[in-house]
Image 1 (cartoon, one colour):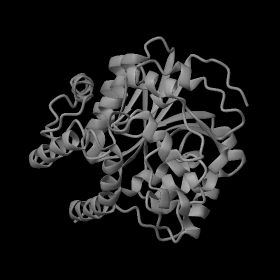
Image 2: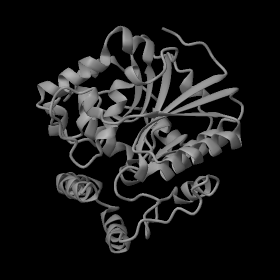
Image 3: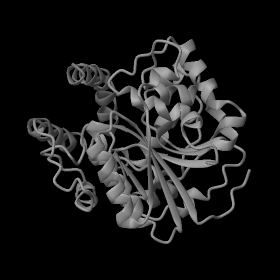
Length: 338
């Protein structure tokens, strides 16, 4: 199915109250960088969103003469009939698997964005991408653990990051894709390392269109030369060197992956200023940075300097550390929910 060029853009986020300021900054970046698009409709699937935050989102929408619709979600358990473990992520992330049940019936296509993304360039090109009869478009994540791919039956296939998804919702509904992904998740006892992202990859495999890397740009492109990324992909398809180099020079959507996030005190993220810029243009302009990260970032910055000449060693160290970081995240999530 080929989508014709349109003056409309549908964006969807999932969030809880704790993350609303970050989502607002992301929405603001979309509004600021897509002023030529006639109609932008933003859907926020929210859990526990306060009345104050809802009013602030409406204020942001009025400022740009755009539409922000908040879709309340009491519990994701309503749509999932099995026990699941999201590890260090909040359960609301699973809502992207049931967007067909949550969004208005007339919505045929959406661009899903994680709340930790920032839009820096017009989105009309990615929005009008011909998905070639595939249900969704996403960007390849070259640094995913080899064992993780093997467990999903994807050793020789590209693994995608689900932080940015261009979804043909019409085809998603027709082929009952959401239910197929949930069935895959259930068959894996509701426990996958990257939860729904793994489930999306494991279910769809060859049914994913690979978007240009500039539409989900994150820090691996600074830390790993193209040669290393290509090696990590093995025999699986990967972007050309030209595509990656263009993405590095012209990122359209920044994804703040990992722990170095611009709202944490002491971070030196290269796109920190962009987050601060767009946050300042929202009703959350006085949102305070997260405390307690200064020592971590000092160590992180030293690690980055030391590892610069040794990208392969860096890769192995990072992949060894990730499971421990996820256990730490899970503990922090439990503390926050007490």
